[in-house]
Image (cartoon, rainbow, N blue to C red):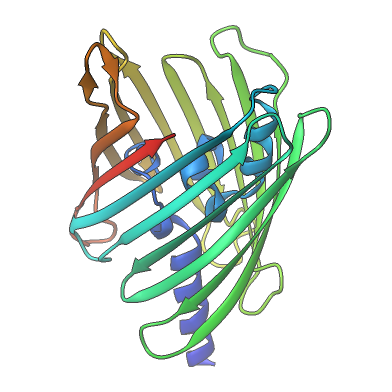
Length: 270
Protein backbone atom coordinates (compact mmCIF):
# COMPACT_ATOMS: atom_id res chain seq x y z
CA UNK A 1 0.00 0.00 0.00
CA UNK A 2 2.81 2.40 0.82
CA UNK A 3 4.36 1.80 -2.62
CA UNK A 4 1.00 2.43 -4.30
CA UNK A 5 0.50 5.70 -2.43
CA UNK A 6 3.98 6.84 -3.47
CA UNK A 7 3.07 6.23 -7.10
CA UNK A 8 -0.17 8.21 -6.70
CA UNK A 9 1.70 11.18 -5.24
CA UNK A 10 4.32 11.09 -8.00
CA UNK A 11 1.66 10.96 -10.70
CA UNK A 12 -0.14 13.87 -9.05
CA UNK A 13 3.07 15.92 -9.12
CA UNK A 14 3.66 15.12 -12.78
CA UNK A 15 0.09 15.68 -13.90
CA UNK A 16 -0.55 19.04 -12.21
CA UNK A 17 1.35 22.21 -11.45
CA UNK A 18 4.92 20.92 -11.72
CA UNK A 19 4.27 20.25 -15.40
CA UNK A 20 3.85 23.89 -16.47
CA UNK A 21 5.73 24.38 -19.71
CA UNK A 22 5.39 28.08 -20.56
CA UNK A 23 6.72 31.10 -18.69
CA UNK A 24 3.45 32.96 -19.23
CA UNK A 25 1.45 30.54 -17.10
CA UNK A 26 4.26 29.92 -14.60
CA UNK A 27 4.53 33.62 -13.74
CA UNK A 28 0.73 34.02 -13.54
CA UNK A 29 -0.17 31.52 -10.83
CA UNK A 30 0.34 28.50 -13.10
CA UNK A 31 -3.37 28.68 -14.02
CA UNK A 32 -2.85 26.58 -17.12
CA UNK A 33 -6.34 25.46 -18.15
CA UNK A 34 -7.94 28.91 -18.07
CA UNK A 35 -5.00 30.58 -19.82
CA UNK A 36 -5.54 28.36 -22.87
CA UNK A 37 -2.03 28.60 -24.33
CA UNK A 38 -1.49 26.46 -27.44
CA UNK A 39 2.18 25.98 -26.56
CA UNK A 40 1.39 23.72 -23.59
CA UNK A 41 -2.13 22.61 -24.51
CA UNK A 42 -1.21 19.02 -25.45
CA UNK A 43 -0.75 18.23 -21.77
CA UNK A 44 -2.62 20.86 -19.78
CA UNK A 45 -5.83 21.06 -21.83
CA UNK A 46 -5.74 19.34 -25.24
CA UNK A 47 -9.22 20.61 -26.12
CA UNK A 48 -7.65 24.06 -26.60
CA UNK A 49 -6.00 22.77 -29.78
CA UNK A 50 -9.41 22.33 -31.41
CA UNK A 51 -10.95 25.41 -29.83
CA UNK A 52 -8.23 27.80 -31.00
CA UNK A 53 -8.24 26.35 -34.52
CA UNK A 54 -11.93 27.23 -34.82
CA UNK A 55 -11.31 30.78 -33.64
CA UNK A 56 -8.94 31.75 -36.45
CA UNK A 57 -11.21 32.05 -39.48
CA UNK A 58 -10.55 30.49 -42.85
CA UNK A 59 -7.01 31.73 -43.56
CA UNK A 60 -4.78 29.02 -45.05
CA UNK A 61 -1.66 27.76 -43.31
CA UNK A 62 -0.61 26.47 -39.92
CA UNK A 63 -0.39 28.38 -36.68
CA UNK A 64 2.25 26.87 -34.39
CA UNK A 65 3.72 27.61 -31.00
CA UNK A 66 6.80 26.12 -29.36
CA UNK A 67 7.96 26.69 -25.78
CA UNK A 68 10.77 25.60 -23.51
CA UNK A 69 11.51 26.20 -19.82
CA UNK A 70 14.47 25.42 -17.55
CA UNK A 71 14.61 25.76 -13.78
CA UNK A 72 17.90 27.46 -12.89
CA UNK A 73 17.23 27.37 -9.15
CA UNK A 74 14.73 25.36 -7.10
CA UNK A 75 13.84 21.89 -5.86
CA UNK A 76 12.16 20.09 -8.80
CA UNK A 77 14.76 20.41 -11.58
CA UNK A 78 12.15 21.22 -14.21
CA UNK A 79 13.04 21.05 -17.91
CA UNK A 80 10.44 21.03 -20.67
CA UNK A 81 10.07 21.42 -24.42
CA UNK A 82 6.65 21.42 -26.03
CA UNK A 83 4.80 22.18 -29.29
CA UNK A 84 1.22 22.92 -30.30
CA UNK A 85 -0.28 23.76 -33.67
CA UNK A 86 -3.35 23.72 -35.87
CA UNK A 87 -4.36 24.43 -39.49
CA UNK A 88 -6.17 27.77 -39.41
CA UNK A 89 -9.84 27.62 -40.20
CA UNK A 90 -10.05 23.90 -39.46
CA UNK A 91 -11.50 22.21 -36.38
CA UNK A 92 -8.52 20.28 -35.08
CA UNK A 93 -5.00 20.69 -33.75
CA UNK A 94 -2.13 18.58 -32.42
CA UNK A 95 0.69 18.93 -29.91
CA UNK A 96 3.56 17.02 -28.33
CA UNK A 97 6.23 17.52 -25.72
CA UNK A 98 8.67 16.18 -23.21
CA UNK A 99 9.05 17.13 -19.55
CA UNK A 100 11.67 16.21 -16.96
CA UNK A 101 10.77 17.05 -13.37
CA UNK A 102 12.35 15.65 -10.21
CA UNK A 103 14.13 13.02 -12.29
CA UNK A 104 10.87 11.75 -13.83
CA UNK A 105 10.55 11.94 -17.61
CA UNK A 106 7.26 12.37 -19.44
CA UNK A 107 6.91 12.15 -23.23
CA UNK A 108 3.55 12.46 -24.92
CA UNK A 109 1.18 13.92 -27.46
CA UNK A 110 -2.32 15.30 -27.65
CA UNK A 111 -5.03 16.33 -30.08
CA UNK A 112 -8.14 18.50 -29.97
CA UNK A 113 -11.26 18.57 -32.13
CA UNK A 114 -13.83 21.37 -32.26
CA UNK A 115 -17.54 21.46 -33.02
CA UNK A 116 -18.69 22.97 -36.34
CA UNK A 117 -19.93 26.16 -34.66
CA UNK A 118 -16.56 26.74 -32.99
CA UNK A 119 -18.05 27.09 -29.52
CA UNK A 120 -16.78 23.84 -27.98
CA UNK A 121 -14.01 21.30 -28.39
CA UNK A 122 -12.81 18.03 -26.90
CA UNK A 123 -9.28 16.69 -26.60
CA UNK A 124 -7.29 13.65 -25.56
CA UNK A 125 -3.65 13.24 -24.62
CA UNK A 126 -1.26 10.41 -23.80
CA UNK A 127 1.81 10.45 -21.56
CA UNK A 128 4.50 7.83 -21.14
CA UNK A 129 6.10 8.50 -17.76
CA UNK A 130 9.43 7.04 -16.70
CA UNK A 131 9.77 7.49 -12.93
CA UNK A 132 13.03 8.10 -11.10
CA UNK A 133 12.84 4.90 -9.06
CA UNK A 134 12.39 2.70 -12.14
CA UNK A 135 8.61 2.47 -12.53
CA UNK A 136 6.68 3.33 -15.69
CA UNK A 137 3.18 4.62 -16.33
CA UNK A 138 0.93 5.23 -19.32
CA UNK A 139 -1.59 7.99 -18.63
CA UNK A 140 -4.50 9.33 -20.70
CA UNK A 141 -6.31 12.62 -20.02
CA UNK A 142 -9.59 13.80 -21.57
CA UNK A 143 -10.65 17.45 -21.84
CA UNK A 144 -13.69 19.47 -22.85
CA UNK A 145 -13.59 23.26 -23.35
CA UNK A 146 -15.85 25.95 -24.67
CA UNK A 147 -16.18 29.67 -25.31
CA UNK A 148 -18.00 31.75 -22.73
CA UNK A 149 -20.83 34.11 -23.77
CA UNK A 150 -19.97 37.82 -23.98
CA UNK A 151 -20.84 38.90 -20.46
CA UNK A 152 -18.13 41.48 -19.73
CA UNK A 153 -17.27 44.44 -21.95
CA UNK A 154 -13.75 44.64 -20.49
CA UNK A 155 -12.72 41.38 -22.21
CA UNK A 156 -12.95 40.26 -25.83
CA UNK A 157 -13.35 36.56 -25.10
CA UNK A 158 -13.58 33.99 -22.36
CA UNK A 159 -13.26 30.21 -22.15
CA UNK A 160 -13.78 27.36 -19.73
CA UNK A 161 -12.24 23.91 -19.54
CA UNK A 162 -12.63 20.65 -17.64
CA UNK A 163 -9.87 18.04 -17.74
CA UNK A 164 -10.15 14.48 -16.43
CA UNK A 165 -6.66 13.24 -15.53
CA UNK A 166 -5.79 9.55 -15.79
CA UNK A 167 -9.15 8.62 -17.33
CA UNK A 168 -8.02 4.99 -17.50
CA UNK A 169 -7.78 5.10 -13.69
CA UNK A 170 -4.39 3.40 -13.72
CA UNK A 171 -3.45 5.19 -10.50
CA UNK A 172 -5.86 7.94 -9.48
CA UNK A 173 -8.43 9.75 -11.61
CA UNK A 174 -8.70 13.46 -10.80
CA UNK A 175 -10.57 16.40 -12.32
CA UNK A 176 -9.36 19.95 -13.04
CA UNK A 177 -11.46 23.01 -13.85
CA UNK A 178 -10.35 26.31 -15.40
CA UNK A 179 -11.79 29.58 -16.64
CA UNK A 180 -10.12 32.52 -18.37
CA UNK A 181 -10.78 35.93 -19.92
CA UNK A 182 -8.74 37.82 -22.52
CA UNK A 183 -8.49 41.32 -23.95
CA UNK A 184 -5.75 42.90 -26.08
CA UNK A 185 -3.93 44.01 -22.91
CA UNK A 186 -5.05 41.64 -20.16
CA UNK A 187 -5.40 37.92 -19.49
CA UNK A 188 -7.03 36.66 -16.31
CA UNK A 189 -7.17 32.93 -15.57
CA UNK A 190 -8.18 30.73 -12.64
CA UNK A 191 -7.90 26.97 -12.14
CA UNK A 192 -8.97 24.44 -9.55
CA UNK A 193 -6.72 21.38 -9.71
CA UNK A 194 -8.26 18.13 -8.42
CA UNK A 195 -11.54 19.83 -7.45
CA UNK A 196 -13.01 16.51 -6.27
CA UNK A 197 -10.12 16.33 -3.74
CA UNK A 198 -9.02 12.79 -4.61
CA UNK A 199 -5.40 13.70 -3.82
CA UNK A 200 -5.10 17.41 -3.01
CA UNK A 201 -7.20 20.35 -4.21
CA UNK A 202 -5.14 23.32 -5.45
CA UNK A 203 -6.45 26.80 -6.31
CA UNK A 204 -4.57 28.96 -8.81
CA UNK A 205 -5.22 32.42 -10.21
CA UNK A 206 -3.09 34.72 -12.34
CA UNK A 207 -3.11 37.99 -14.29
CA UNK A 208 -0.96 38.96 -17.28
CA UNK A 209 -0.57 42.50 -18.65
CA UNK A 210 0.80 43.39 -22.12
CA UNK A 211 2.34 46.83 -22.65
CA UNK A 212 5.01 48.82 -24.48
CA UNK A 213 5.04 51.00 -27.61
CA UNK A 214 5.06 47.81 -29.71
CA UNK A 215 3.37 45.58 -27.13
CA UNK A 216 6.69 43.83 -26.64
CA UNK A 217 6.44 43.35 -22.86
CA UNK A 218 4.30 41.11 -20.68
CA UNK A 219 4.31 41.01 -16.89
CA UNK A 220 2.40 38.56 -14.78
CA UNK A 221 1.63 37.73 -11.17
CA UNK A 222 -0.53 35.24 -9.37
CA UNK A 223 -1.18 32.89 -6.49
CA UNK A 224 -0.57 29.15 -6.72
CA UNK A 225 -2.16 27.42 -3.73
CA UNK A 226 -1.21 30.33 -1.40
CA UNK A 227 2.28 30.67 -2.95
CA UNK A 228 3.10 33.81 -4.93
CA UNK A 229 4.36 33.86 -8.52
CA UNK A 230 5.63 36.67 -10.73
CA UNK A 231 7.67 37.25 -13.86
CA UNK A 232 8.02 38.88 -17.26
CA UNK A 233 8.23 38.02 -20.96
CA UNK A 234 10.00 40.16 -23.57
CA UNK A 235 9.71 40.00 -27.36
CA UNK A 236 12.77 41.56 -29.05
CA UNK A 237 12.09 44.26 -31.62
CA UNK A 238 13.86 44.30 -35.00
CA UNK A 239 13.41 46.94 -37.72
CA UNK A 240 10.29 48.43 -36.13
CA UNK A 241 8.60 45.03 -35.77
CA UNK A 242 8.24 42.59 -32.91
CA UNK A 243 10.04 39.28 -33.20
CA UNK A 244 7.95 36.09 -32.97
CA UNK A 245 10.44 34.93 -30.32
CA UNK A 246 9.91 35.58 -26.62
CA UNK A 247 12.21 35.23 -23.64
CA UNK A 248 11.17 35.37 -20.01
CA UNK A 249 11.84 34.76 -16.34
CA UNK A 250 9.47 33.50 -13.65
CA UNK A 251 9.79 33.43 -9.85
CA UNK A 252 7.75 30.93 -7.83
CA UNK A 253 7.59 31.03 -4.06
CA UNK A 254 8.60 27.76 -2.40
CA UNK A 255 5.92 25.63 -0.77
CA UNK A 256 6.17 24.29 2.80
CA UNK A 257 9.76 25.35 3.34
CA UNK A 258 11.01 24.48 -0.14
CA UNK A 259 13.38 26.85 -1.91
CA UNK A 260 11.95 29.52 -4.18
CA UNK A 261 12.22 28.57 -7.85
CA UNK A 262 13.61 30.68 -10.69
CA UNK A 263 12.73 29.50 -14.18
CA UNK A 264 13.89 30.87 -17.53
CA UNK A 265 12.02 30.21 -20.75
CA UNK A 266 11.73 30.96 -24.42
CA UNK A 267 8.90 30.55 -26.90
CA UNK A 268 7.99 31.36 -30.47
CA UNK A 269 4.79 31.67 -32.50
CA UNK A 270 5.00 31.02 -36.22
